[in-house]
View 1 (tube, one colour):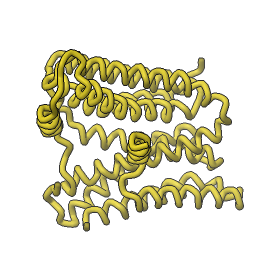
View 2 (cartoon, rainbow over the protein chains, first blue to last red):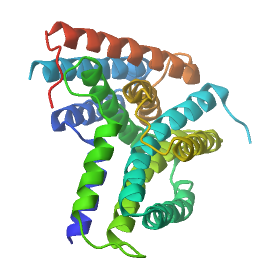
View 3 (cartoon, chains in turn yellow, blue):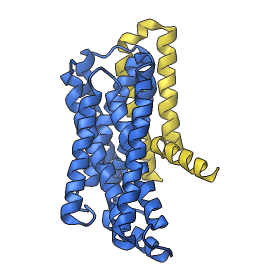
View 4 (cartoon, rainbow over the protein chains, first blue to last red):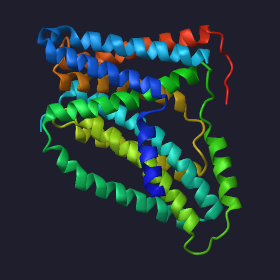
Length: 68
Length: 250
C-alpha cells in the first residue's frame, strides 16, 4: 500500500506544485467549458478569453509567490 | 501520413527540450549510483525502468485511439496545461531569484552521500538497482506523458514528438558517456522556461479545441499562443524582480 501511495503522490506532483495555482487553472477551464456549453455563441471569442484568463492566473500567482 | 507543420516542429522541439531536462536529471542520479554502488546495478535498474516504460506505452498507447479525439484533446490538454504552467511558474520564480536554481552538482553530491551511507552491495546491489530504477521510471514517466500529450492532439504528431524525445535521449546518453559527470553546465532553467511556454501553449490549444473554442487562424494560433505565454512570462519575471526579492531562498 505504501508504494501505491508514493506512486500516486509522485503522479499528483507532476501536475500540482502549488495547490491554489492548479485549482485556479482547473476552475477557469471548467468555467469556460460551462460557458461555451450554455452559450455556444461565446465560442468565437472563447480562445482569446481562455488565454487571457490563464495569463492573469500566472501573473497573479507568481507575484504572490514573490511576495511570500 | 500527413504531418501538420504548424504542430510538428513545435511538438518535436517541446518534446526534445522537455525530455532533455528530464534525462539530465535522471542521468545525475544514475551516475551517482554507478559511481558509488557500481555500474551493474545502475545500468540494470535504469534498463529495467526503460523496459517497463516501453511496455506501458505499447499497452496503453493504442487505447488512446479508441477514445474520441475531442475527449483526448480536452483531458490531455487540461493535464498538459497543469504540467506546463507548473514548470513555467517555477522557471519564472527561479529566473526572478525567488527560489534557488536547480543544481545538478549539488544533487549528485547529495545522492552520492546518501548512497554511501547505505549498507549492502555485492554483485546484485539491491539499493543501486532500486535507486536507478525509481529515478529512471519517474523521469521517464514524465517524458512519456510529454510525448503522448504533445503528440495526442492531431494525426501524425506522435512521430515528431517521439523523435524529439529520442534525440534528447541520444544527446544525454552521449554526453553522459563522454563527460562521465553531471551535466551542470546545461542552462536547465532556461530550457524549463522555454518548455513551460511551449507546453502551456499546446495545453491551452488542445484544451480549447476539446471544449470547442474557436482559435483565430486555427492551427496557426499555436505560435501566437507561444508568443503570448512568452511575453506574459517575461513580464512576470520582471514584476517578481520589482517586488524587491533579489536573493534566492532555499
